[in-house]
Length: 438
Image (cartoon, rainbow, N blue to C red; front, side, top):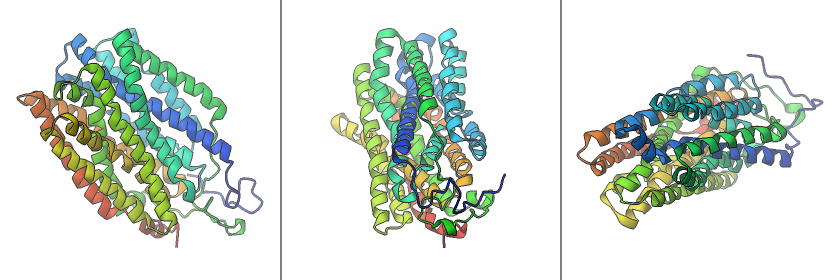
């Protein structure tokens, strides 16, 4: 890897005393948020179309769960590969290529709808979407210094929740009135439209070293210290963010694949009612992903450490969601909907917090690869969650009993993962050990 360049006082790219252009920074952020909306809509479409797909192809719950899980087979691998590529290639180019690729993944389903085509489409979609979240965050964080990074980072993650909230009623409309294949067409076309707009708006951010934007005087500019990948991966904060993220992502993957079926089969709602109700947890998730990082940023500007504002807070949110998940199967009616909303809506707040922790402790030139690798490991939960849930349901005496057991597994992962994260995450400590701060 090429050595990072020293930014001198006459370097035209110096950004230590001159902030990035605000209009361009927020335009790029808005485009990235839109990309995440489309990204999560693509994830959600299979779950929203579960009933007609299972009926058309005569699938059991376990078979459908296996198709849903296949989305994650190459998801993590591609995230790692593209993450290391991002150390050398502009993130603007990477995001455009990913959007084109995942828009093309609808073709197998549209040209020859079948079970093998569904597998091919979901596996290819997962490979194209795997790197998107860390690359989106990496692209935005190059435009904002540490003191103003919380909200734009949170917005990139909130875009995913908004994607689910906006997509659910929209895609249900197309599925109900025009068949489930129409939803795949709409999403593919939307992806291509985004790529065209990105060609005019997308630009690479100027904050390309750890000190950039932190108030360092031009004459005091320094290169980033070399930190081995072994140290970047093998530290308590890395493992803490990993544990909390796995618990939260298990809940997310379960919700995307199975929440509409749970609302219909166990709580007795119609398909249209389920399509509307499934929006509620995602709206709460969007609020949490924006509100919690915003609060953490305010706390840190008042002197609170990242360990408390980001590590302990993120762990506590995931634990609270796990406790709601434990109680959910034992309730009904409005209380069940409330607990369902909290169980699936709260834990997503840990995702932007973990990305902010990463930016606080990682050299910029290795940030993309390290964050992408963590994302890859976290999203392995997506491989297991839908398939494990389907097998549990098939092996139980009823769908309700199966969901109760599956929710218990998810709750345990969230509670344990949240506790580990709250105890281990300490970005200030790691930044000092890596020589980034004193």
